[in-house]
Amino acid sequence: MNLILFDHPEIRKSLLPFTFTRPVAAIRIGILTIAEKWEKHLRSKGSFATENYLSDKFPLLTTTDNLWINGAACPTAELTAAILDLKPEQILIQNGLIIAARTAGKQFSEIGTQSKKEFPGSLTLIDQVWKIYQHNGAQIRADFELLTAGRKSIGVADAHTRVYNPSQIFLEEGAKVRAAVLNAENGPIYLGKNSFVQEGALIRGPFALCEDSHVNMGAKVRGDTTVGPYSKIGGEVSNSVIFGYSNKAHDGFLGNSVLGEWCNIGADTNTSNLKNNYENIKLWSYAKGGFKDTGLMFCGLMFGDHSKCGINTMFNSGTVVGVSASIFGDGYPRNFIPSFAWGGAAGFTTYQLNKALDTAAKAMERRNIALSEADKLILKKVFEDSAAYRVWEKKS
Image 1 (cartoon, rainbow, N blue to C red):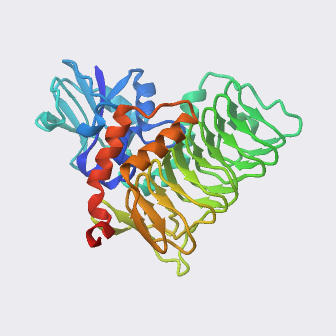
Image 2 (cartoon, one colour):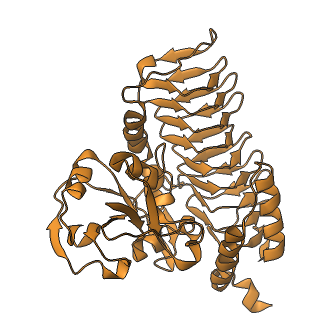
Image 3 (cartoon, rainbow, N blue to C red):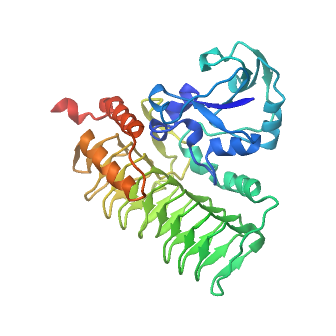
């Protein structure tokens, strides 16, 4: 069977701004992206059924026997078994939502006419942005078990590093720790290939540090946190997910938050994750076109790809920032900052596309990665589609 991870249209809207620049299944939660989880569970390479403007970078490959899986669904042994048990032209649903389908059809629109089979088991569905950090601890545990089964860690060789519950600490080849504290009593700690935990860092599990990423000196990392590949963190980080290629390298607090790729958080930037009156936090929803009650007391910052903020930026609880925004200045900026915004609490202008592309190219060049034509077209499409949210353009 040919694995295809599809975007459910309504779920994709609810996961903006992160799905402006990637399919749903390319979201990182736990140690792996959702797509990578399915590829390991099914031992098969997958492709993506997503928006047309994303398809050059995330192509769709079809055959005469396609296994379509909802890109928001996280795999479990029970769900994997149910999907593998699907017969040709059969569909797996839960409460009316398509979870998977096996069909010869080559378009997502062709799914739904097959015979239906209800999935009765527990389902972790990442269908809201806050669920990325909300379910991150559980997904770290699941991915840790998946990645380390039958394998041996290189171990912590540093005599000045203190470890607790070492059986739940796994270091990949090239990972280094120096004079740090690793406490895996509440959950596993995974250090990816060539990652580096520097002197004085305090880390509690569940925690994942992916390939070539760094925890800087003196950092304090609470549980349920993931740092994607080629990233750096410092200061205090709690229950947050960084997709990859992003830096929050300095002091300051990041909590109950999600950062996309190619982001930079300025020194001493802080995110509020709790309202003074302890009420539930409302978060901007692209699907609703307004603010939506998360049902959560703790919610911090949702920060889209290529966005950046200056030193000492203050983000209020429940702030959503789009793609390629640049935030700076004193005071609290608004709780919803659209893509390609330039400014802060004093007001915004438009971060023009040519300048944003130039910045993106320079940032990626630092990691020896070129800004491809596909990337440029994606950012151009986001710039155009997000114009309606840049209300100041209508006043000029």
